[in-house]
Length: 365
Image 1 (cartoon, rainbow, N blue to C red):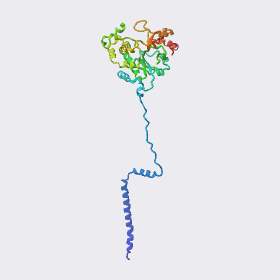
Image 2: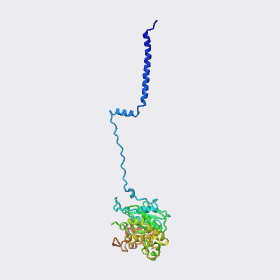
Image 3: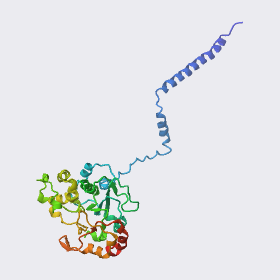
Image 4: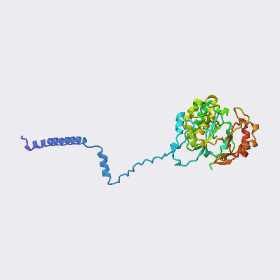
């Protein structure tokens, strides 16, 4: 039997179709793989966002705005340094000698009185001073200079708490002058401090705070050393109490002095007692018109000798205190007054109880 010609063609068609389909399928896979290397994945979210924008608005992006910087101005300069710091004496005196040339202050300021206590012991009469200072916190600052060997500190809430620093001082030696300048320099770091009073640990106030600070021979020249000439001549040599009161401008002059300070350091030693001569001589020579030639601290030398009289409990009475307060006559701002002494020295600790009881009726604090 003969094969039909049409039968052989029908058997070949499926094979041809399969080959053609396989070629198309393989060609499609090859194109897909090739295109995958050229399409950036980052385009995908952009495309989706572009298509979704027709249905929802894009989010509103608010730019970040940092807070404005806090103004410091003069705050760092005006902030008083801590009592304890690591400045050397040279650094301290240099820092304290700075002064503004513009006299009008560009900020609110309450002038203060500085009470600088140069002590050999603790402050045995501190309770009396606490009464004196009470209610006047905005108007005073306290600095206490005590020996290194004295382990004493005032507990809170005393006005003396945290106001002490210690350095070695030889009583009667030149280190007393250094201690005075160190007290002044530390106090000058606070721009609010305007009046400076140096007191001992046995001083007492004779008047209340408002009355005291209302804003409205052979022993002397025999200690002179000729080697100080010509900077300090014998007729310029002065002797006086080391306890003083001065204003800020004069205090800056004292801590800035290097010439006279060096001469006294070299030539006024041992029995010269430089603390009784340096400031009286320096102030009289350089600022004589600003020197009142008197002291604010009352002391009794009537018995003579190298040391003044000490007040004992048997000495304290209303009569004595009134005599110390108003017995003398002097001038203040060219006006005659009987308020000449604001403080009295050499009160032993045993007098404290009597002073505390008499203060409200005699000193009015």
